[in-house]
Amino acid sequence: KNEVEQSPQNLTAQEGEFITINCSYSVGISALHWLQQHPGGGIVSLFMLSSGKKKHGRLIATINIQEKHSSLHITASHPRDSAVYICAVRSGSGGSNYKLTFGKGTLLTVNP
Amino acid sequence: KAGVTQTPRYLIKTRGQQVTLSCSPISGHRSVSWYQQTPGQGLQFLFEYFSETQRNKGNFPGRFSGRQFSNSRSEMNVSTLELGDSALYLCASSLAVRDTQYFGPGTRLTVL
Image 1 (cartoon, helix red, strand yellow):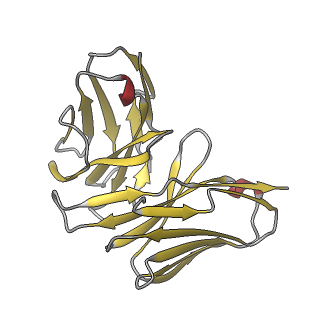
Image 2 (tube, rainbow over the protein chains, first blue to last red):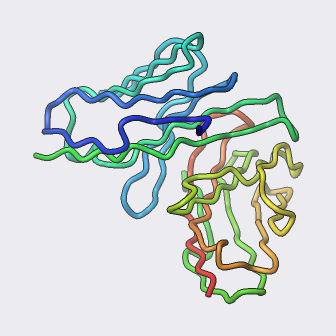
Image 3 (tube, rainbow over the protein chains, first blue to last red):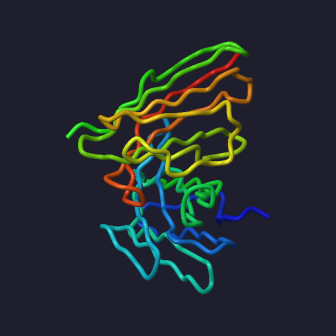
């Protein structure tokens, strides 16, 4: 079992729909990241969170440390949101103990 | 402010050769991280540097090495290239370790 599991693997939505992408992890973490990767490879860091909830524009990220689960929500989705969304968890305290583990990503396609 | 730049953008090498990739962080950023992305394994963490010191290292063989210079520019080197080293190598910079990371466009390495 991977340490970081994302669901769904693929998601197709119509413009305007509310979208949720989930990330579950099995280790104790110090932080969780959500990344966005567009075709061609460019990666943008969307959120870094260790508790609670963060909001940026139409994007909302939440994390529940007790349940080892995070969600990324997109409100009023738009075709330009089409991308791969990747969850990554940071664990360990540094040096050889440090680990950054990535999920396999969720491919989101938003149709007009 | 200029973003993270990586050179070269594309590279073709043959098995057994070595390669050096370069990353110039955003001005003022002192932390640089390197990642490998392949279709099979997804994103994997290689190493993280801060103020010319390697702070964290991923689970890669010793053929993968890196360094950071006093101006925060970083290089990574892969010796004795193998076919499996074909990947997109991404560099990301941040003000400090554990801050939001800004990714470069990547170097696509093909090993023949």
